[in-house]
Length: 291
Image (cartoon, rainbow, N blue to C red; front, side, top):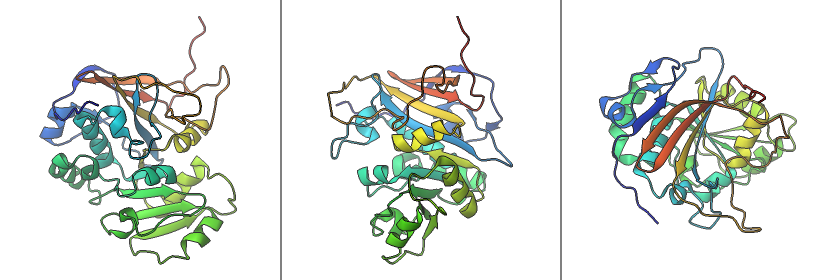
């Protein structure tokens, strides 16, 4: 297992003309390069971030080795990008499975890259955002341990998006002051991506929504055509799959038939050592040309 602990600048290989540049700190600009992000006024801008192996695996699904660190090889550059995206975001959304895989985590910039905490704080202050993004946890069942740090530490504001049955389950525990529970009306099955965004907008006026997993949650956003951008770090390792090992790609639980796939437009390619940092725009939902 490699440990890419060096926090060195990314090399920009390609950058299409994009939305306005956001002024980030000089140190972050040296590490990442010029950073562009839409600043929407009326609609939410939804973007996702994953790290994948060359053969498309985002989770080994092995206890204590199911997160992105084993996929990226503990890359400091990947953590820097994750922290930057969290620093820009108003809300970070994860599913209950992602929380279960890393129960002590807080979805904050310094929670993933503490060595850049000062820069991330300065960036959020410059953008007039709260100290940390809202952490939104999606759980249909509501079977969550509210003593976990994301709910009980008071270091982040947390929102659980659940069903009416899940809300009843949660309220059997004492709700911490920093936690709100939003039940989706008349929802008894899977929680749709559209209803997740509506629940967020009811609680938070911010428009920049970052999806960090898991793959089934992200699959819903692709299925409902509600994802605007995909950030994808490609790590230079091959891990393979075996029958029934449960290893995941970054979209699961939905499959698009021929001719109905979701096509993105490449907007950035950056390089850090042997890793590629890709960015795709899905807002246009363009179909490929027939050749």
